[in-house]
Image (cartoon, rainbow, N blue to C red; front, side, top):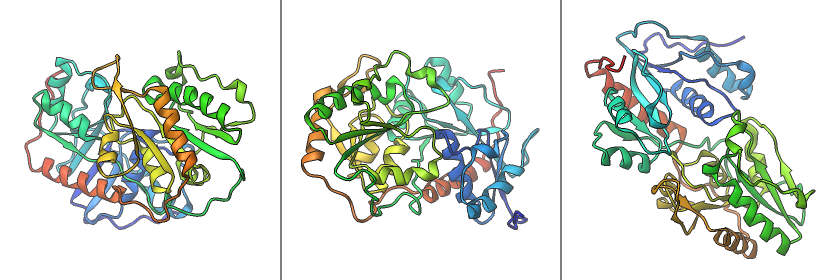
Length: 360
């Protein structure tokens, strides 16, 4: 039996227009925001896009809070006390539904003039990184606010490793396989590193609903059979136990529209985490989180970065020579921080006249 919390006095309804899930970035983003918003007095979270319960893996207590949110739906004209959050892709390509007042975006590609015009139709654009905010403001947009993703520190926190592979040095690489995430650099660096260190193993979490994005990447590790572990498709809630078994996490990503949630979770678990010094990663590095990799300009877009393979190998060597594990969780944004910031944005949006879309 589900217990429906009493939200009869809610003065603000926040509606997500994307699916909630435990298996991909946007879904995890929505899942955690929904859980946090359920605890904010006077706020009711809703969804406008059906979410498959089979794609949501949480403990039974969280389910008691989350499933009533999924049972609510919002369609048709907005009510005076509702604010719709609209998930946007690169170039603001998705057409704005009439109800949307707040756009949420994590972009990694140049923006067209038409995209910038579409962005002006929202009360506010929420970005996932200071880099995204800076790009938009430099293009003349003023209605921009950065809200960083958070970490559930009750799950992602330092704890003893089980030492499943005693005497081995485990390198973790995560994120959906695509050029932007730099798994080809990870493979090239591991190929060199593993030849030097017979105890090295690579742990990969590269699966996503979009395998076509990996086309053209060199991800051949067949020469290291038995030394590469593909963890497959796992729900987010079980990833902490994988991270904590690893000695180092390597993220030579070429661009991140957000702060890279997988990297944040590794950091929260106390794992030595190596980050490319570009785009959204810089929010983490400015907070003193992670070990930076030197970057050169990428030929994809001048805003992207490129990690030289030897730089990645050198970073792995430093981690190998001086292994360490953080005993206490580092300070970093939480989902509670993100939810409270969204409530502030939504409340401010309600105080403005609703903007009518102009690109029909």
